[in-house]
Image (cartoon, rainbow, N blue to C red; front, side, top):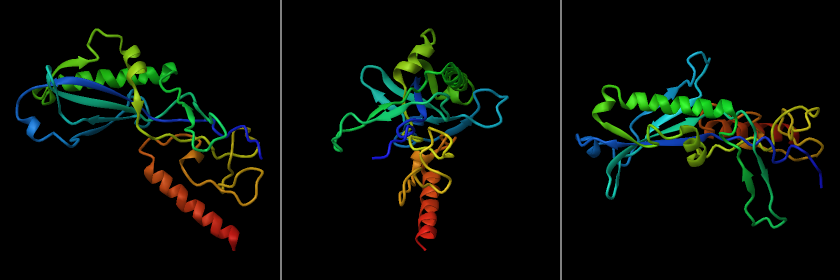
Length: 222
């Protein structure tokens, strides 16, 4: 009905890579099952102006034949390149196709490996070394770049596929008042309008976008 090049483009998310170590039997198990106990804010490069990682201590789990394991997940809070979302058919019940393209850019994979090395160092430093044993996955001699690219999952912060921008930008879908370019009485008020994914969880930002959308619609209606 109204073709806009930017719809479905500009997809961004936060990739997550989890490192697993053997847990030492020292009483931590009784306190760290069923809840995360530590969240760190980390810069992959000390020269950065702001953080680009959340690093989260995961629950202790028991793996049959191996024993108790402890994990750290590395959450990269930015994405240099862009993915896309497309429809596989005209049937609205069919799930969309998401090509996230996460950890494909050299800058992003370099940042992820830097965070992974930090976790390795952290686990071997007091007092964490009294809880964390040997690194299990990935192994120290494994190709960590390949491991990250083949095992990453999502922080579930997908955004950007109807990005906000001026009409002169062919990839922009909504203007600064969240109105769809070239259409009347149509606004978008969710995470899809973010030009760039936030360096944080996206829930509060999405709530703010929804509040602003409501204000803009009320102003227009009256």
